[in-house]
View (cartoon, rainbow over the protein chains, first blue to last red):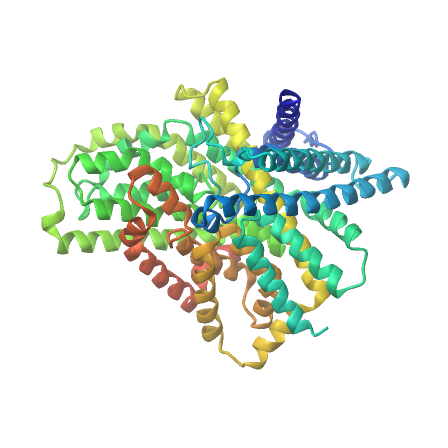
Length: 186
Length: 434
């Protein structure tokens, strides 16, 4: 069970990272095409009009994949920001109680969120909604990635809630082997 | 029910949620949901899903992971060593000497990274031990680093300016360019202070080292030149309108990989660490932004920000009074919250107020970021303090005391930007792309 869950979080994070790599590749290809065209027109040739079709929209969709599929892994690496002054100051028993409260709120909210994201996806699928660009992308595809990311996030929150209720430490409280403080955000 | 009471209730609810340790993004979603359910009769779940979908799938926002990734790659290269070796020979003869390496190093690294924690750590990794070895005053060594590390927020590319731009629908390119002059001004203020301090405190300065011949200096700096080219390329192409921020960032990622490869620091491990680090950091920020977008929509439904703006308007404050009050408010908020949370929390509530006061939103972004920079070095929550606590072993309150002069210099910078808005606005008004 533990192994299967960890594999799920890793797979989800890997897909998120893949989305970022794809964005970078597409944008670099677009810039390269523009530079090539610029060079051609400088030399007096006709520009080829090289461009990645619907780049802006597809990059936006990939960003949704990257942002949502990484939620669970971000939680487990303690990278979601929160204020922990109070948690550090109160006695351990109270801190445990607060931790359960925090996880319970998150589980309730993300369950509601995931459910509504699923409804949105279903709507787009049934009404066959597509994006406006040169390449009409069915909207249910990126929306399904959003829903899947929220679902995996929900599973990881439930995972941590169960662990905490059984008396353990949630994943994001365990010190990570190669986690430096610096990988912060700002 | 009376809106005022509900507004106060929601504010207290937000504070309680944050104080008990609920993740900032989750707290934003939860409080916004409560506001929608309590105050308006719309299908809350549908509004939630469509708002988040709309806010998350954005071309402009793709600049965020790209710039974070670029910084993560360079953070894992040997830039830290190169920066100290390359800058220190030039600083030996200035009053304040190698202390300036901290400031300039941070300024330069800030121009490839949007993060102040990464800036502080990258520069400090090398400069703190070196300065200590040479007998520099520890208080100044740590203080300069804490202060100038915050430049990562202001000097483009800046993660927090992307967040502000996304939350307020302002052009990220213009915000970036607007940050250039105030960023350089802060660098100059810091360096001026260090120079004056060192003249007044000669006894605390270590003995002078011999100057290095010009050619040797250039040789020591040679490894910094590619980074300089990278900086000029990224910022210059945005300024000239040749590239959108995302495009400049993606090319920046490619060039950073090349630099790291040339320095021999690129391997499967550093590549995947940088990529996963960037994925998680941008996920965290994107999720907060999604929460902020929902909060903005929820607030719009409730009409709370409009009423707040009217109430502030009825007080007939001058812009100076309004900004003075806001500065104090942000600094207090920044004592307990990180910068991104401060920005998204406030933009969803106070933006109508700012518009009504007739303030330029690009200018306000720069003002807000300088104030948020101050919050990076105010205890008990300040990211630079956490980084420096980890690096030096001094507790955050001690580090904060060392950084106090630089906090005050930032207050001066805020006053200057308020008095002379052109410091921020002149460059973006003269950008080639509109």
